[in-house]
Image (cartoon, rainbow, N blue to C red; front, side, top):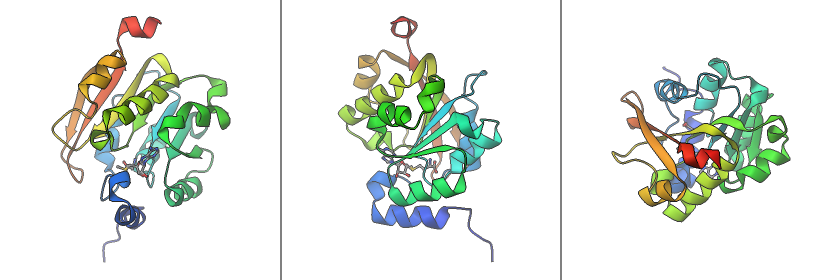
Length: 200
Ligand SMILES: C[S@@+](CC[C@H](N)C(=O)[O-])C[C@H]1O[C@@H](n2cnc3c(N)ncnc32)[C@H](O)[C@@H]1O
């Protein structure tokens, strides 16, 4: 019998318990992870991942050369956090809400060595109200270097962030790859500060 991909059953069980928060039936595919990694700035060393799940994207970030000590993975679900902690020794695996990212990233010492070059998000932003989207983005921007990027995947045809949030935070958006080999197929979006906003 063909064995399921690592984490598939763990993830599905968490989805049964809280479908809205888990936001996906199965972990992301390697192809989706590669499409996100392709959007990292060339000189990327330090990455924050929001909503690590069972580690489908974490694994590919490490395989792409991000050093474990330069990676922070945040997860809100206690069981998934414990799974990530056991699976990725040396990575800063933190339990908590993305809205509290600056405090959590400082608390574990990640920000002592500087801001992140990129935030990679697996959160279900599209289904969140704009106020929550704004709070999460503001928290992520506080941990990102001025020209850093916020990389998000989404399942719907629309961009994951509300236009009002993009405007309010002075962001620009670029659409990355559409990935058919994912359940469901997904598109990558990249948000970054406008030059004027980055200068402040
Ligand atoms: C769609 S899953 C993505 C999991 C994994 N990154 C992947 O791509 O397979 C979203 C994950 O975000 C977590 N999550 C949801 N809301 C969160 C929040 N406010 N802060 C941190 N993690 C959150 C969920 O528990 C879930 O593991």
